[in-house]
Length: 285
Ligand SMILES: Nc1ncnc2c1ncn2[C@@H]1O[C@H](COP(=O)(O)OP(=O)(O)OP(=O)(O)O)[C@@H](O)[C@H]1O
Ligand SMILES: [Mg+2]
Image 1 (tube, rainbow, N blue to C red):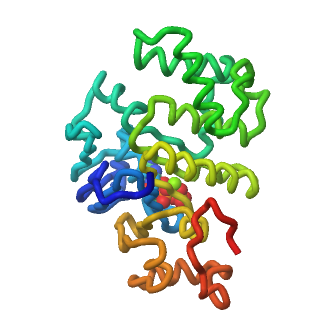
Image 2 (cartoon, helix red, strand yellow):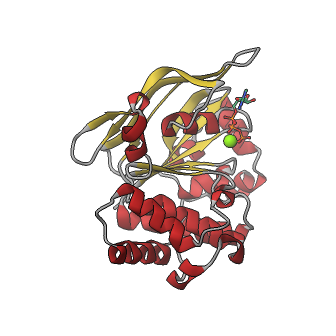
């Protein structure tokens, strides 16, 4: 499955304020619609509010951060509409991971160091569905590890026994475990070397093709976004200033800031004007 026109998440006029001594409106009336099966890139320079927006959508903000305005609607596969900003307690817990999951920067350090990979996957499955048998939990854990390119035998390993790339794959497996319809990924591979990054990103796009989840993918790396995204939203000073297909954005960026952002990557200017979006499955020329 690839991108559709069917919405899975509608973010409308979301504003987030850090209520510090000098309150900062870090996200200012941001709106976008994420389509089922789509990879939506979110680009913009450091401090423009990407992580703040991702946290708002994932309901991860703690004071002093406050989602001050707007709405986030999740359109479930069965037709139910979920008002994400209104979720509380058990309903919020059930929503997270099962409907929408997150992989954040340095998430690989969030694994519990004293529990094996298998035990951590098992905990998540058990917390979600108490009626699931041990055998089925094992099978599901093995399946997701295999999907992200980790030998299921690694279930018995502790996080420190794995390379950084493997740990990050495990975190992605964890995020996929309950078959969410949306995955929010904030710089999920920046701590890794470039070759490992590319491998993992290829894997994510392949999985999207197979499983049909949608991805909000955040990174500074605009060339990378052009390669893997169906559409790209460009943020500046807390606002989404442009949102278009990767091709259109590259060919005729409407907003001067987007042009500037594109221009700041030498590999994307000059001769590379003939850039063709190849998709991550293919090698980039
Ligand atoms: N805990 C906080 N308290 C106050 N202000 C904050 C806090 N966290 C972030 N901000 C401010 O909110 C704005 C947006 O930050 P955010 O981390 O969302 O940007 P970003 O686009 O994710 O940047 P980067 O690309 O560096 O990750 C920045 O101006 C930042 O200073
Ligand atoms: Mg950030």
